[in-house]
Image (cartoon, rainbow, N blue to C red; front, side):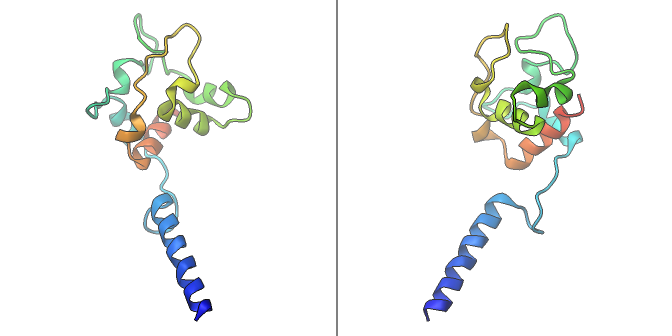
Length: 129
C-alpha cells in the first residue's frame, strides 16, 4: 500500500511540475520571434508596450536604451549569464541591470502580465536585433 501511495505522490508531483514548466507534448516551446515582435509593440494593460521606451533601432530620443544589437550584447553583459538568461532577467527583474546613463524607471510588473510563452517569444525577437 505504501508503494502505491508513493507512486501516486510521485506521479502527482511530476504532473504538477510538468504542467507548470512544459506545455503539452513534453517539450518546452521555443520562442516565436514574429510573435515576439508583435508583443514588443503591444501594450498589455496595465503594462506599457516595450516600444514605448525602447527602440529596436537607434533613434534620436528614447527613454530606455536602444535594443539594436541586444541579441549579440546580452550574453556579455553579466559574467556567467547566457544571453537568454540576461534578457529574461531584464524583462522580469529590470531593476537588476540598469544600463549606464539610464534611470531605474522600467515597468517592473511584466511577470504579472506576460505568460511564459510571451517571455520566450520576446526573447526570441530580441535575439534577432
